Image (cartoon, rainbow, N blue to C red; front, side):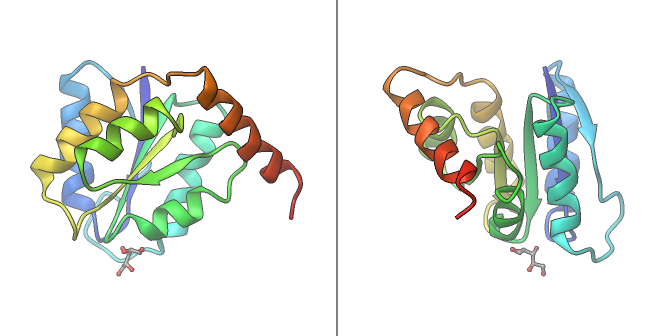
Amino acid sequence: MKIAIGCDHGGLDHKNAIAEFLKEKGFEVLDHGIYEQKAIDYPIIAKKVALSVKNNEADLGVLVCGTGIGMSLAANKIKGIRAAVCSEHFSAKYTRLHNNSNILCLGGRVIGVGTALELVDLFVNTEFEGGRHQNRINLINEIENNNL
Ligand code: RB5
């Protein structure tokens, strides 16, 4: 399984720890940066990770900025992306089970690295439940396709 990851200057330590963690667990990692502690506008990185997921270069994505919110707003503008900001375990698990989210967004200034790794672990190891939840995803897609 391949995971695309990326961050802005609010999440570099978290992103690097996530890259190491995922590799240790046997995942392939596609690291879109940043690679040094230098300011960057988060939509640039969100777009790269989201397009990797959309184009099936990666199965799932993880984005880290200061709050996780900017990354999620930007990533969710790409068709087919369901990016969820999570800062606790229940949401990280259920956004896979019920929302079939394909990108996890984390706040590097909100949660510690230890929590971030646990949330990533849950996210990448939980499968979408399908069933009644698929119809809800279809309804989201319908909104997306209507270009409102
Ligand atoms: C950057 O200072 C900060 O605004 C960004 O990392 C993120 O928190 C935006 O949502």
